[in-house]
Image (cartoon, rainbow, N blue to C red; front, side, top):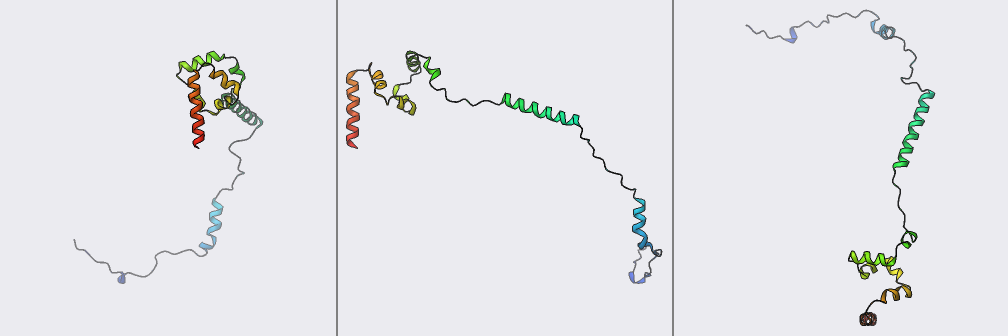
Length: 146
């Protein structure tokens, strides 16, 4: 096999194609004539009153389900439910749970309850007098150091 090298300089410089006269002037009209005329576009989904009623029913159902299943926030219990429980039951519960009066006094609600003298006297009634004197002296001596 003998390989022949082609030299570009040896090739003819003529174009083998001939364009008919006026071809590019008439080309856009020919292309447009082949395209079918566009029909009036109709929407894929037609909106009817049945669809409107169905949409309203679905939204209403969704709203009712959210309303029914949404958890309510529980507010404060207030005084009324606790007023039905006796003081002895509360004290027994606190003793069973090993919760002392000191543990409760760290909470602001209990501290406010002890603001009145009658409440304090009620809880101090069962305590030993020596213990009460010792606590009072410690409190007084602690406030003098400040």
